[in-house]
Every structure is written in C-alpha cells, then in structure tokens.
Length: 481
Image 1 (cartoon, rainbow, N blue to C red):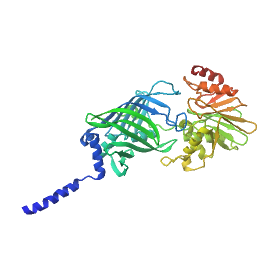
Image 2 (spheres, one colour; image 1 turned 90 degrees about the horizontal axis):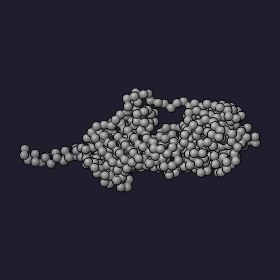
Image 3 (cartoon, rainbow, N blue to C red; image 1 turned 30 degrees about the vertical axis):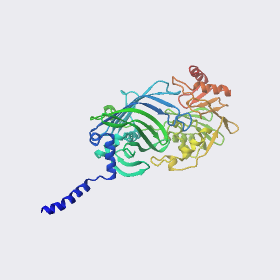
Image 4 (cartoon, rainbow, N blue to C red; image 1 turned 180 degrees about the vertical axis):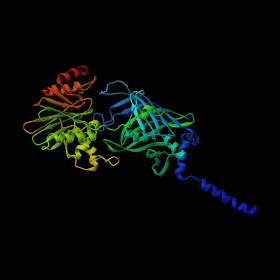
C-alpha cells in the first residue's frame, strides 16, 4: 500500500495542478489585476473617483473640417464610477479659449448614468433625464478605465471572448453589460488603451478610444494619471487626474429624475412664413431653413439639426411648389449641428452647394458607414454631387438671383457662406448673428462683409432666431467691434 501511494502521489499532484492552471486569457487578467494593485484589492473596491484638470477639443465645430485648434480649458474634473453596477457621474467646469457664441465665461456640465437612466444639466440641483442614445453612450463610457474593466473580469461581470497579440501588446476582446470592449495591454501588464464602438448622428459608425499613460502609485494602487480620448482619429479630450477608491458605491440619479419618463425627440415642427414672393422661412425648434423658388427649381438653404428635421423641411419645401423640383441644398458651413441633414439631402437626390473648403468634408461624410444605426443614405444609397463656392457665386434663372458669398475671417467658421437676394434685399445667414442673445462675437465680421460688398439689406433672415433688420445687426455689432 505504501509503495502504491508513493507511485500515485506525484500523478495526483500533477492532476491537481492541471485542474487549477489558468488559461492564457485568465493569466493575463490576473497579471493586469496584480499590476493595478492586486487581485484582492481590485475585488474589494466599489467606487473609483477621478479628480483633475484637462483640455477638451471642439469635435465637428472647429474653424475648418478636421481642425483641432479650438479648445476648452477644463479647470475642474470629477468622475465617480461605481464598480459594482452601471452608475457613473461626471462633473466638469470648462472655459472656452476662443470666441464662443455662449460667451467667454466658465460653464459647468453634469452627466450621469444610473442603470437605464441617463441624466445631465448645467446645474446639479436642476438635472434632467436624457434619452436612450445617452444611456448607451454613457454605459459604454463607464468602461473606459482599466480598473473598471479589470474589476468586471475578476468578479465575473465580464468575460474575455478572444485574445491576440499585436506587436508588443496583447489585445483582449471582452463582453460586458454595455456591449463589446477592447482592452490593449502592454508588456508590463498595464492597460494602454480601451475602445468601444458606437453610432454618431453625423459620423455613423465610430470607435471611441481612451489611451492611458503615466501610471502612478498611491495607497497601494498603480493607476494611470493621464489619459486622452478620441472619436475615431479625432482627439476630443486630454486629462490629468488623481485616483482614489472606496468600498461604497457612486451616487445614483436623483429620485425625481429617475421617476421622470425617458424623453423622446420631439416631432419636427416646420412653420412656414413667406418673407417675399417665392421665398419661405421654414422655422421651428432652434434651427431654421429657407427655400427659394426659381422658374425651374427650388433651392434649400440649410438642412440642420437632425435627419428627421431635415427630411421634414425637404418635404415641406416640395409641398410649397409641387410642380417644381427641389434640386439643390446650400450648406452654410460644416459644423455638425448645421450638417446633420447632409446625408438625408443626398439621399433625396439634392446637389450640395457649399464653400470650397467643405468639398472633401461633404464627400467624406457621404462615404462614412452607417451600419450600427442606419440612416436615409445607408438605406437608399445615392451618388454625392457637390458644387463649390470660392469668394462668391450666383444662382439665377434670369428673373431672380441668389448670391452666395464667403464670410471670410469669421471667428466661428472659416468656410461660412451667407446668401443674399438682391431684388428682395434679404440676407440669409446663420451663426454670424443670432438675434435674441446677449453675446454676439461674430456680428461685427458679418456687418463688415455687408458693407464691403455694398449689399442693400432690408431684412436679415437668421437661421437661429427671428427675422430682424439691418439696424438690429448694427446695434449688436457695436459692442463686438
């Protein structure tokens, strides 16, 4: 019996070792947890708090397409992430470093997620519930920190579905309660970046990436102190933070917010006002359009805000002159809130007229994939047709002229167009002057162009706000000048 036990004992030990041997994926997760502070410490944590400062960039709203020069200084940044459930709250204060239509003062923003309730606002005491798109976006954003992903992996809240090697990094594909997450791990077992995928109303299919560096040791933890965020290849933010953990969770949504119904996008409201024979102001919500009738065509100025609004505006324009085809869209500038309906207009067969600096932008937007959330152009592909404007261009049928002029030097956009109807003495513009506000940093530039071109203007038809006169613009331009 003793001899039998002596022979079988080594076999039993090898069998036990084989049963407990970790897979390569499990071993990497263990290594990451140890690199961050230890497996037991990771499991015990419940709340991660990040505090610091940083810089944000103006995605889709800079002076030119693709430019990353306009920034906001983030003077205070706090993010509380509950590790045990989908809760996160971010509070930041930022100040623009450029002429901003909302003014030069600091702005506070609060954004949160609590299970299926997204919320936000500028005043922590007056937060409001956000829609379904914000829920998906923030649940995914919650995983953009190594500790959050690692905690979910070591506690069984997430699982590795694939692992591969790319250069010096190992890539983990992970399934979470917010969908797929990709985490890259360096040779030192420290995560270098985390990616998730989403849908953007202008860009379609996008990859959101956060990269990490400068791991610092504090209170037994080794966590990144700097990070940067990107949407595809555009950097949206850079932050320097300190980290601390606790064994209690993050604050949830305020009870009144959680009890409120989830908001839905309002149905487009298109109010028609004929400002001159054959010229209609299509107002509603915060962004407006203008349609102009020629003998052989209708021309629409602006397809803004959303695909739904732009399609409603296009339908209304066609109702105004049923026998006249709508053939052209004048896009004032590239900013995302004024080009969200661009793809819808292309899907409707319209030729896009815009400043020459927007030519590549229009074609790139038309070519982007929209597979995660299909839009009109993804459902019914059409070729993109672009006609560009340099300093100026005139559209005419011999009886009516529409002059398009580049608003050069505009601090809001380098590729801005304004439209002037000389016979009607009407000027159509957007973001150069928005009546009703108290701060008009671009009004002086617009007035200078009117005077330089010697345009005779009785009425200004702004695509933000109501119709005003030239005197209103002159009064607004004085403080800015």
